Length: 322
Image (cartoon, rainbow, N blue to C red; front, side, top):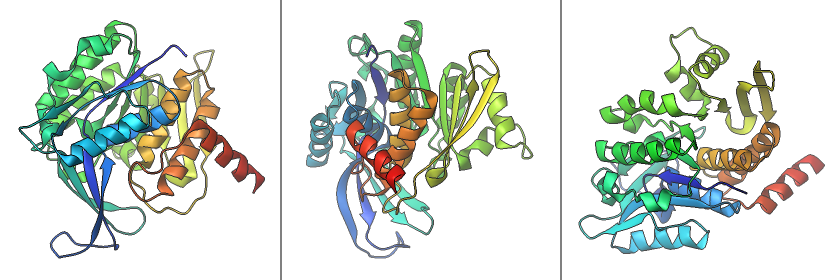
């Protein structure tokens, strides 16, 4: 197998509004708590596929934190990088759903235990055999967290390892100045860039650029693989072939009833990155990533739709049969 993945960031509990269009300024019913956090979902999906993954985060010494750590450990995530704090409670998120997979969030991350994640908590010994770092934009929520990510990035890059980056943009995060400023630095070191259809314009030089033009400009900056996640329509890939010519392809997605879109992009990224590192072809890694994303949205709860490799194979096989 020969690789080990590391990811860093928020580990929290999530509460989901029972009804669509639930406002946050009115009483309503929420279900939960569910273990959540974009990098936590990513790590859980990598572990479910049977690949080694270590996760660095912080939780409070409370029941929410214990529940999150227990769940990750049960699914196979290496939890040695998770620190329990008595000074702050475990982070939380409240989610309200609109139509067409749109959501509103209220996050408590910077002022929770997650906000205590720092440079000193990234243990170099735990990174010794890590060959790949996955960075998620939502995890760059403070200068402390950015320092922690940068430390891991430098250690892994110095050993010849690779970096994947998913900006995971949320409108609730745009007032975090440090996050936006760190994007340029991270992109310089990124080998695999995974972003959604709605995010591609954020990285364009101008408003008139097409997705393809933006992707080619990013490849010319040194990124080797770019994947644009298109939901149930599938994914677009931009990279290079054996002759160093630009290679563009689209892999169709799977039609499935969406119960809860939270976590689908993280499951997609985890599946694509780990299978590609394991030697799968780009086409096959994308097909499995699309299947992983489809199964993720079929369950209520951000981490409840993570899948094993056998489950993905069965889903793809059944989809072809139908």
